[in-house]
Amino acid sequence: MPFILGANETKVTGYDVANSCRFNDGDSAYLSKTYSGSGNKQTQTISVWVKRTTLGNNQSIFSSYASGSSFAFLRIRDDDKLQYYNNSDVELETNRLFRDISAWYHIVVKVDTTQATEGNRVKIYVNGTEETSFATATYPSQNAEVKFADDNLHEIGRHNTSAYFDGYMSEFVFVDGQALTPTSFGEFDEDSPTIWKPIDVSGLSLGTNGFYLDFEDSSDLGADAKGSFDFTANNLAAIDQTTDTCTNNFCTCNPLDQTNTGGSSATMAEGNLKWTSAGNTTSQSYMRATFGLTAGKWYWEAKMSDSNSGVGFNIGVAGSDANMNAGGSGNMPDSDPNTLFKNSASTNSATRKDGSDVTTNLTTVAENQIVQIALDLDNQKFYAGVQGTWLNSADPATGSNAPATVDANTTYLPAWSDNGYTDQITLELNFGNPTFSISSGNADANGYGNFEYAVPSGYYALCTKNLAEFGG
Image (cartoon, rainbow, N blue to C red; front, side):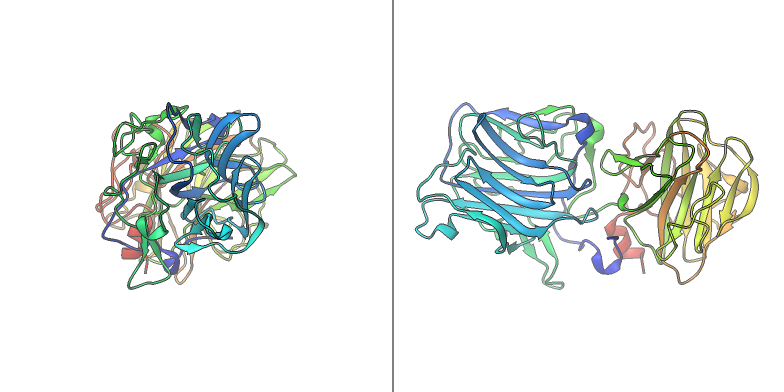
């Protein structure tokens, strides 16, 4: 169960990456460009930062397609190994698995087929370190040509008509005519030498068919930041531009930390921010998020965007040691510790702590309304609001009338579930990068996040820069 604590934070750096692009495979989202002329097909470099959200599926990061048997791709396979493939004469497939959905990976593929030593003709690096252990290692012959930079269809996030990528990409660079090492794109932090971080790549010479996608134009997510080598965005919208990046990692839902009872499973979409319950009255689904919190004051929202027949769900926090298999009576796991707002279609809504009601007769959330959560771990207080109004006449900023408490000396994670007796529920979690339209737009005091309602004074969005400052 990977989740982020202080030791796993993204390092605050001098160079900040502002944006990423969120790819949702259910939307068949991808970027495409048909090259009109060939570049250097012997010497080139691919560099991209990726954050995965789905495991166990073939997911193409970059591909070049000419015909049924003439193609190349860089992808993560359905067994979660990283693979570089060109026709049938080049294939590098790692032994290492890439299954951390809470982390950003920096992938570099260096190609120079003019090298005399075959092992130097294609190299793969992840987070600044060369991959040397391969399940399959077939190297090109000397001076062979690969399909990237050729005059054919190139796609980001898809290969031909399949293998759609699901997750986030940032700082996508293709260099035509140079075989570069990772140090052209990143560096190890001098104070924390195990942390690999990006550097400014705007000064690189990219060559004939090179490009740099920084995803900073939400109206044109395929725009080349260094020139006119633009890609066409397909099934991507402005809302798919996010601030979840390799220099400021945001919290998301964690499908590796879920429990489904009754034989049916909840599903995830939109960068692990859109959660849909099993839709079965005999099943119940629980999930926690990727951030573990021990101190500080934190704010997030959730939109209840769909309910077939009722509005029963729970949202709040569960301890890292809470037994996610222990649930009952339509509640989130009743094992300690947990605190939540329970929304009910048939009874009065309430806040609950460790399986028991604390404050009752609260507002019931209707479809397409937004729930606010404010968690004060410094004073062990929990707040919930609906549509801009804090329940129990509370004020998180002043600490008054908190409808429930949390335990001290406990690691809590954002958590939610359906109530078990209702039909399908969809929650769109907003930890700062919403999947739904925001009418007003509110950031925290550090300028992070995009929320529908004002962030209470002293509270912050769940991102690694805030976690480094306030997370204890």
